[in-house]
Image (cartoon, rainbow, N blue to C red; front, side, top):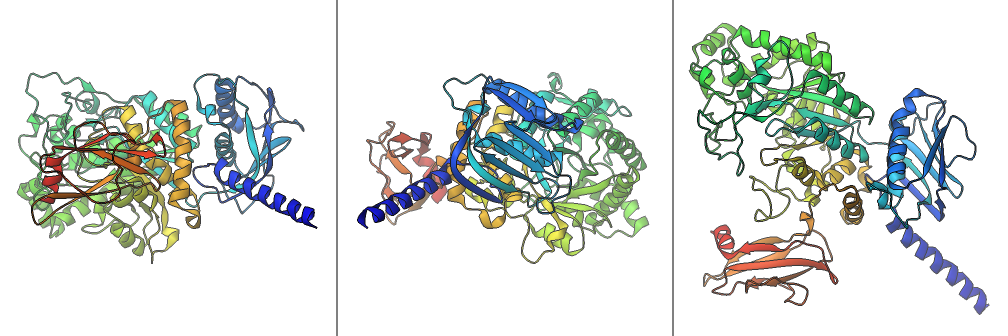
Length: 634
């Protein structure tokens, strides 16, 4: 009897140990709807036979498999229409499975092979992306990995997205990114089942898309004077400085990127930001402006352009299109016509944000328009513009979308809205019956600092990984059917190159992916972060940059009655130890460990901190000047 009890205990302990191993060995982002792991694993054979049927539409999925496996594993890949003993079977359902919808899949890894089933090629593609995450992280490497057992756990996965719109916006106007760099950004999106690439193509600093009707948009509007440093406070360029920094995409480039994205089941929505943020267009065609002297305007490099300290953020130069000029609408009709012919996606985003109206207030043309159309406010002037613009977009067979400012003065009848100033605008638009995409600064503005400002390119706000993970696109009290989904936005004022774009996007992009794909009930930050760390390893393999900012502590200073400074340190990730120094040396785990609020020594000038997990340093060395702590308590 004792032996039987011991055997039962032994089995239970073994089962518990396996369950614990199962919970940590699988790290899929975004979290699938259901994962059931079983004992054992499937070791992939040297010759990898893939059964794919005979559909030509399978090509993108097969290319993904071939590229990954041939690059990292050195295995021979053979594709067959039918192969009963295939290592990987890709199966399109003959009868639609309503559970998984158009983008979902079933993945079953057994001891003798892997089967992925879906209703569509998109579902199979996402199933393969999940399969890659079940493999060792070396699958993301750029050369054949040695001494790796290519195996996956025996597992059954049911998965489908919560939202159809799972987006990332990439601003290529503030700084230009090459076609190849844009494609690499799309590659990383697709790995995490994000399917909407919002391409911000025009702004004050550059017009990035070839428009054959108006060639000066790119010969003039795509280039400025190069500046590096703190964007927004650059020295104004001198007249003789060369304007050769920037670039644009030809229409053939656009077609190539669209095709590339389509092969990864990513749609591309273009954005032309009007009537504000239009200095590049005005510098190219001054007749677009309502202000005299616009022929002297130049494309902005990053010098001060608006006064953000005053109500309405008045512009220092008129970076708006003339809402009262008929040439404006002729111009937009031709621009939108060419863009609509290039992009198959049904929506065109037309901006509408941060339109300074102080120059409109001074314009005789705008005053005459207001009298003619009985417009009482400048917000109604913009609404007049937006409604005419909506008709132009619809005349090209497209749907009109804008930022939440298009609500001000009255939204057009069919406009879709992207809510960025929190969720308030999205709630209002949904209650009016309009389609909404949520992209609030509160959770998903990827240009915001990820750590303390002493560690990051300084902008006006911070956004930690854990805060992004709280994002839920559907606010309480809103008809969920009108919320198309959510997206994160990467504005690039302080982002000068693709490596920094990667740094700003990941890991917060992981949090976005889980917020728009996974069931809300399955979200848990601590569980999520254990997966994030495993994906850091995968990014190391792929040589993709990411931010380790999540390991950096937060500093909360306060002042005592005797004017000494206290500082409290907290970590976003549980289980980390913080070590510190005030003596200007570099602390490690043999230095004093933070256990409670610190009082800054009277003559100290610098607090250095570093985080460890056990004996391993995980955080960066953070240098906090005492003068900065004093400034904050003032």
